Length: 77
Image 1: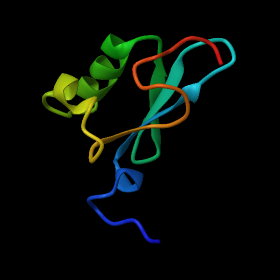
Image 2: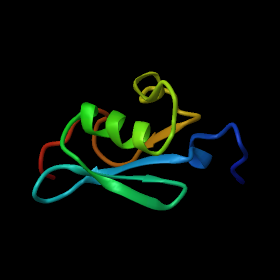
Image 3: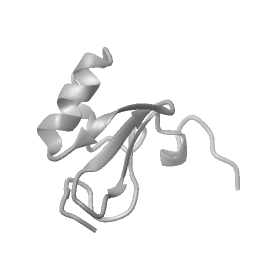
Image 4: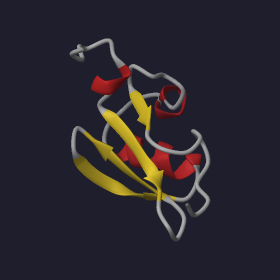
């Protein structure tokens, strides 16, 4: 099964699984933006990367893929 532009697998923003110490790495098209401790951090990283309406993107699976754990949860794994 291959991914295409509409699949979550092709989402340009990836919020990686929670780390052992808490927080989630955030990347856009493979570029690391930072380690988010909350949704506000993700929104700020995306804003700095030039993505408009970053807050509205967090629950859009075409734009953002949440890997491992629950979306919007940042506690240590």
